Length: 301
Image 1 (cartoon, rainbow, N blue to C red):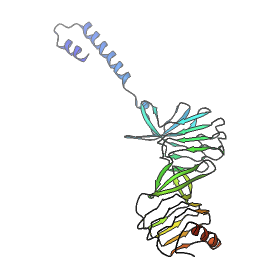
Image 2 (cartoon, rainbow, N blue to C red; image 1 turned 90 degrees about the vertical axis):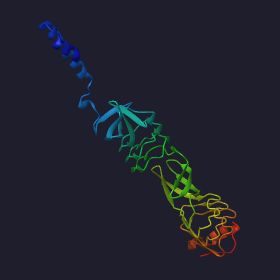
Image 3 (tube, rainbow, N blue to C red; image 1 turned 135 degrees about the horizontal axis):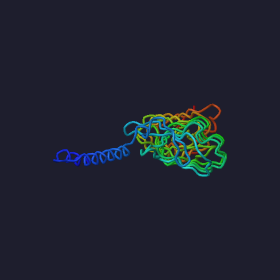
Image 4 (tube, rainbow, N blue to C red; image 1 turned 120 degrees about the vertical axis):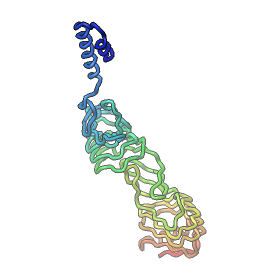
């Protein structure tokens, strides 16, 4: 269009009518072009709130390649609900990284939820009093924080489904229970050589706290550098050969009184005269468990 106007200006004996028509066409072309330019108020902005598929979102990060939103509420009641990995708004794609405080509370008919893999934070009372909620599936393991009472009031039979194995502070774990009423793991091993070991009473994974209730069989077998071990207060079972072949293991401390069984040869080929530190009330019963495990040359203090 610009070239057409320029051509008219260079043309000899151009008429006023030709110039008027050309300028009219140019004006129309400019107006059409302006329609394709997105005004600033049509672009996403930080803290914008919008709806998508029945969920309400708020933009929490919008800079460069970082584009995040939080679920802050719902526009309807759900039976099944998926918190997506990402959601589109005004031509941009945002990761869903949080579920806000009370965002999905008091959903009267909600039975199952799928949590997207980018969710890092679940707010206080996020699913509070969702009485029929019986299944929550996590597609990822990114959750770092779960707010107080986030799951309070959901069905007591509710199960949480997620990847069952994980590593925390070089110790390997496997989930054995993951429900609204009980969350437990067993230690299955370690990712490095240890000089000392502390089996914790609990471990946090995917925003939830799990009691450490067992040391699996052969978990620390042949740990050649291991000299001492502390067993967490929630451990009920120590599997067979759990510490077998730990030739330098000279001291084991039991922090609690929950141990009910110690597997055969759990402490085979450890340091001679290994010492077991036990609560006074459990000295007799623990001694019997250690003897039953075929442990030789040991002391109970």
